[in-house]
Image (tube, rainbow over all chains, first blue to last red; front, side):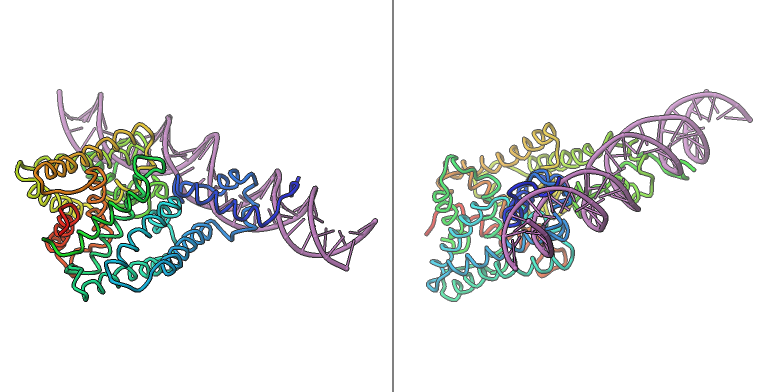
Length: 197
Length: 197
DNA sequence: AGATAAACTGAACGGGCGTTCATATCCAAG
DNA sequence: CTTGGATATGAACGCCCGTTCAGTTTATCT
């Protein structure tokens, strides 16, 4: 047999990416085989190679797509204004965006070491772009006198680490809504970067 | 050939654990083979099985040992006193302890999903113990009126995520000493959990 | 000096890996 | 109704995996 009824490229392609994302996030890139991905899609392993040149590209493309989405979404959400306003917007944006795609986030943070050097550099540069966006806000806040941190780069990394940590414990339908979580974290972020009493 | 000159169990054992730790941290558990570990030690793959029943135990024992060390060290460092004092001690302890063993920390955070269910539960319980230690401090601080967070559990996770994040960027011999880093983070932690102005 | 146990080798086991490719089937266009 | 390209199969490639084990070497004890 070959090419079973009703199957099309524009259906199989996305299903492969979705299966790969799910499995990479669940078990890790190295622990997932092309045959597992294929079986999840209901196809033989060889068929995957109509959609990706190799396993590495599957990972690399997932991460690239995620980072592109992240940067585009933040650029769309950011607006000029007082630094503390922009910082609050960043906090709420980051939490909401990350909670909506836990698998992609997990992969982006855990599978960097499985990227070949060239892919690693490309993805890493995108992450730095995102961090730079937050750091610019903190620097603006320092200029305006509202933010008080001795090192904006370190504060950037600290804030992002704190916010991304939400993904490790938050479960939809749990005790708190995503909005309540964002309220709590915004209070902590504000306290962490503003002047002590 | 077999049993080359001067080799002993009490030397090979630690070297195997050290090599496994290094390689697991560098490339991930699933991506590292028993033959790679053996070659790092200068031994054939079969010899590893004089020291570990299987690959999974190698990982599980590393993580168990790390968590045991962590809990013991914190219990030795913690002392009664005002909550903010204990919190500062926790902050400095956490950063110092984690910066001293980056490989073990990396494994403890990244390889949980590669633990078999029983091992996972055991390690996860130890992590909860550690978190509970911090949460108790925050609750004490709330009772004393110095800590103001709507949810001590969430604040606990946020603080730990922020502090552990140091390991992703800190490099010995860099711009800042470990002590300076701890100073900066203690300021942020204090601001995050105390009352806003 | 000889015996014993510990430490290790080297080969083998069955199995899964990523990837390739000849072949078969299906769909759509002419 | 034919044809050509897209889509998939299934078998095969060479390779590496975790683990086992009989046999060999070495250190230690008597």
